[in-house]
Image (cartoon, rainbow, N blue to C red):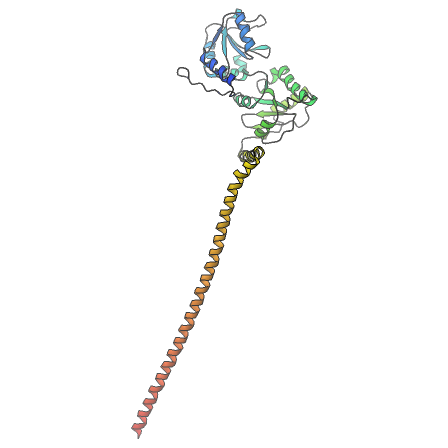
Length: 352
């Protein structure tokens, strides 16, 4: 917190980086450079240096506004014209200049657009050692990231050649690609494999679109700088095939991949713990399912036997009823016969 403003740290979680962030935010938004000696001292300390050159102007007001927003990422300085090195030539004043990669670049409102967007794009060197935090920050620039995925410990020709090709393109083709591409290399393929949900064989080259999770792989082996330039041009004109993305199928694939990766990592790090964590719940669920299935089967047998017994009782009851009806019928017949005999005797007596 600084006054009414709150600044969130988004960089690497290391002691030196956090201390530098605290010192940067605690100081003034715009640090003045009163002399050439001070300018040279600051330039040696910072790989990327933004400097406002000139007096009060609407451009400086905009510069201060942008500094209040992006001070969490980089330093902002101001200087007069006579403080700048002799090799610096500015077309007009006031101006905003960025010093990096052994040279300098001047902000042009007509070509570069909004000052905030320009500073956000230019706050990185032309070539970077890329890691997870760097990729996260590069997502704000809107640039595609061309990465040589190599093994830094491997000094073979193939690994060093791909790294050199990316460096040459970043340096020699800056005017062509710097607005759309950021260049660098990454040590190892573990992070990139988890990001792409794919198994890349190193050394290789991949171009990432951090805004929509798409990526591009060359359709042929990159042998030289010309092959890399052709690959980049194919991406820009849409002829290169994009893979990945952030669609529904990719999200489902991400869930499955993360679950699989978690299980595999647990078993790799501690097989016994993995067996306990995943075996115990599976065992309990299996026992519950077996109990439910067994209970249903026994219940079905009992119900069948009960129904069979009930049907038997009904049959016996029906048979008993038929016998009783037969006996009653016979009884009535007997009673009827006796009555008829008595009646016959009376009639015979009358005749006599």
